[in-house]
Image (cartoon, rainbow, N blue to C red; front, side, top):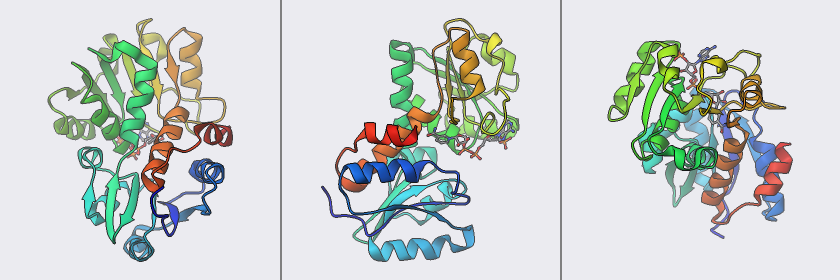
Length: 268
Ligand code: NAP
């Protein structure tokens, strides 16, 4: 195990809804690490001060909305995933230097590969949304053999900006129906379905072999994922990805693999 961080925190605003504390504290208990993972609500105006305090004690942690881009700007070094996605969801201070990482990228990749198997080759993906999570999804898909992505977003100019970052394989598509007609995987990277029963797209518009990946998670899965399963599609909600990004973060902080089953139980 590497030297213990002085403190392990989730930085965001708000943070009260996050399941990361319950999941990470279960992993810390299972590994008998004498630390508590704390959710710290911090407005943008106090972010620099908090990072200075964490620098002094060699802190580590996660970052959530709205600070994923801002923390990157304070970093001394960053992984390729964080640089490409232009967002940091995991960090640690080592010898006073802030190292920024993005474990959403490998987490999405791992869960998608479990869902799709060999179908990642030549995948025709529709990504709904064009924010930070969509950028992480595109960063992962960039390594899939011969994949193509259509980005559909409420504001098409945001989709166009994201597509420009990944122009070798992605383009903005203002017409959802046209995107879905050839889709083999549809990804919801918006909050639609989190606090309502809306679908990010019509499941009936999908080909029978298309798979459904919802980044949103909630108790009992999202209505969209439930409907996709009912119609016989391979489908996952965001819970396995949440667990995976947290497990990969834990590994970067402590240098050991966490007890994923303890984390899964805590999320239930
Ligand atoms: P973000 O940067 O704020 O981006 C949100 C995106 O969703 C934007 O493209 C926005 O469109 C779109 N959007 C917001 N409200 C919408 C609505 N009512 N209808 C249609 N589109 C809407 O957020 P993010 O960080 O990308 O996160 C997106 C979702 O992914 C969140 O629910 C988050 O919890 C989830 N997530 C899950 C995991 C996981 O591990 N499972 C990891 C990361 C994120 P505009 O551009 O038009 O504003």
